[in-house]
Structure formats: C-alpha cells, structure tokens
Image 1: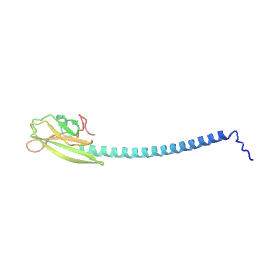
Image 2: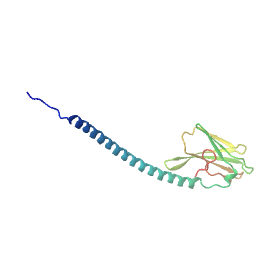
Image 3: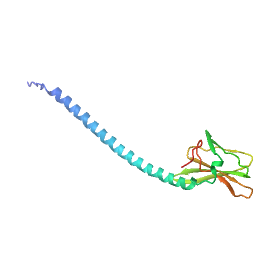
Image 4: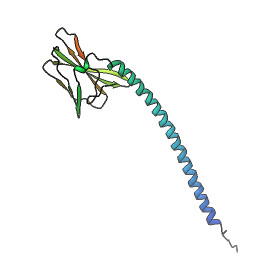
Length: 160
C-alpha cells in the first residue's frame, strides 16, 4: 500500500501559480490598453490635422466680409430650425441668406434664400446635425452687394 504525503508547501505553490496567471492576464490587458491608447493618439493627431485643414478652408470661404458689421447677423437654433436675424439697411432692396455645410473637409453651399427688404430674418428648417454656417448678403436695387457678413454659426459667433 502506497501512502501519499502531500507537501506542506503544495497549497502555497498552487496559490503562487494562480497569482502568476492573474499577473500574466493583467500584463496582457495593460499591453492591449497601451496599444489602444497609441491608436487613439494616432487618430487624435489625424483628426487635429483634418480640423486644421477645415479651419483653413473655412477662413478662405467665409473670412471675408464687406461692411458685414452693419448687418449685425445673429443665428439661433431650435431643434432642426435655424433662425437668422439681421439689421435692415436703407440701401438694401433684398437680402440673400446663404447656407453652407462642411462635409469631409469640403464646404458645400446648400441653399440661397432671397428675402424682401422688409424682412429682417429667415427661418431655415429641417437642418439635421451640426456644422452649418450662414452668411447674409444685402443687395441694392442694381443687384450689387451693399454689405456681406462673415460666416456665422450659432449666436453671434463668427465662423473662423
């Protein structure tokens, strides 16, 4: 008959092996987290470059104004409706509200709304999402620009 005598350290060795496995799993998780952080950092740098290029194209499209401060353009949003307000000018025969949207680093003119000289606002509906810019142009009776605002986003913030 054989008698098996368990080593007094057998239980401790088993626990040590379990701890080693847990440490290996933690190291693996740390390595995965480090890789994910590297990927996110790379994505952030890529997005920062894209935002910079969007900002440059934006200022190229909307940075110029002609007496736009006279118009005092203000934009407010309620759900999918944007209300664009401006001060009326005596020399203006009509106003034109241009609506732009940025899609994949390119600016697209969505619409141009013509408003009579007696109105000081335009309501643009069904605009989903963000990234819209509004510009108001006042034209005289001969069709020439009297004033043109810079591109405006929500509130009185000038698009830069």
